[in-house]
Length: 440
Image (cartoon, rainbow, N blue to C red; front, side):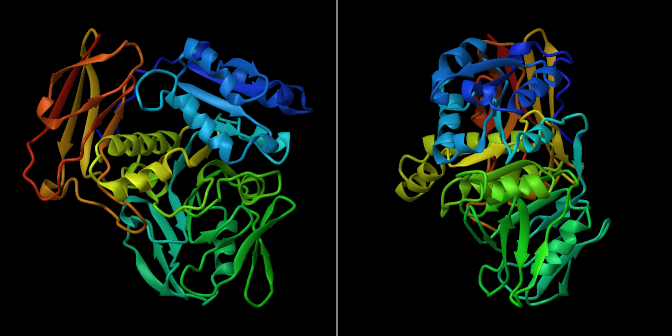
């Protein structure tokens, strides 16, 4: 099978499986109660309200032990501390060092913008990927990117074909806006210099600059012309190589403008200037390069699990530890964490199946499909690419797990996921790697 079987999730979720957290202040603000009610209805969610700091909700979250948590927040409640607080809430829900639920933040310049993010009636299958930097085009149905290192260089990957290099305008501003406004881009990936208020798609050359005005993303070209982005089709935005794009210091910022004028329903971004890059670029390792296997939120969480696991296993590497520590809790997820946005199924270098073989006993089978190249890096553009462990999300009907088979692969068993250190590239592999676990 091409992606991890998730059929074990119940069709009708108990209310506590999805929790909405919201401040009393936001509950009482005009229009924002409708945002909470929308999630309460569509996700059968339990609503937990708090006064003061969001950290004050920790005790109630421990009692509920949900799988999904969504914070409905006004822009003034967000910022760098909000991101670190949410990571802390997820990590401190029990005693292990990993985050214990999938979470996201729903917000907007207005309550109407936030309400749009709660529309989860239709999943998104990502077929067209656009970017300002190189990505694993062989893993997507079709796509395009503008090179951030060489002025005038752009690439296109047609459906059923391979990526080809083309010549474009030295200033890519107008071309980027045109591609977004065509309404076909389902996922947009960016890198380059950025702040909460601008983005420079030219990293090593002089190019136009993107900014925001009245909630709309605009591109100002070098000739002074302004090009307005009007791209309402639902999409995912991954500014995985940008500084600060995920930070919301108030209602006037890039993140909220992407949501308001560009149809962005889910977004992952740094809330600080970034230099190490593990927490950002690694999302592509799980999401784009394993097409169809993970939702966006799962890919982001899997990468965070990988970061924590690597920190725990890098005690003798001071440089890596400093970078991993810096990246911990520095990204944020905007959108409904349970909304299904996946890459269209594509070529996978290994297959996975997770199935229950008897009461409380589960088997995870990894089948190599590319010989000794099965676990080699797919794409190395960016920072801290490749080497990510394999991760599968488990059912949450156990109080822990016992390893029955597969000890030689050194798997890590957590509450609701299993992690397998990636076998080294260019090594002989068995026909299948089998991990068997038993619920306690």
